[in-house]
Image 1 (cartoon, helix red, strand yellow):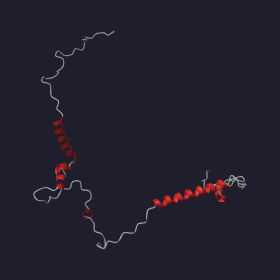
Image 2 (cartoon, helix red, strand yellow):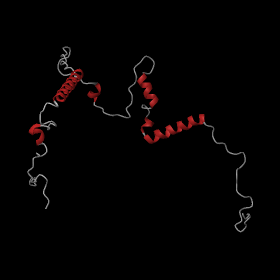
Image 3 (cartoon, rainbow, N blue to C red):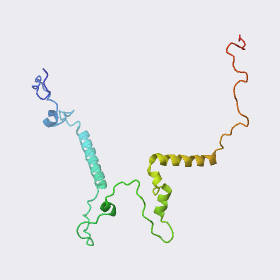
Length: 179
């Protein structure tokens, strides 16, 4: 039977002068190398204390330089009362409409830019609503464009190769031995 680590009884450790992990710092921190205190290492201690204080001051200065100032709350807009208005798209709630027809563009004798863009992409054409037909039309248009770039393969003026005139005989071998 195996016990969960939390359910096991604590392990008995031998009583020695070394405190368990985590209690060394609480007991008084690190041990000093020069525990006798004969004055031999006092200059070194003062140097290290000064270096530590200078480093702490530099860190505090760096934190103060990079601290983001607290922003004041935005002022209320007096021109707008109550809730803000919703947009046209939210009001209509149409979602994604891939094959929507464009409304008739209003303009003086011409098409608007948005309507021209729809005509170029084919959003106004009913035959392009079927994806298979749309790709077939695109392929035909690509073939026409390619014919303008690449010359087509021409057939030979004769009838081409029509096999051996007398036929191939299975029992005749006309070959040479090598080597």
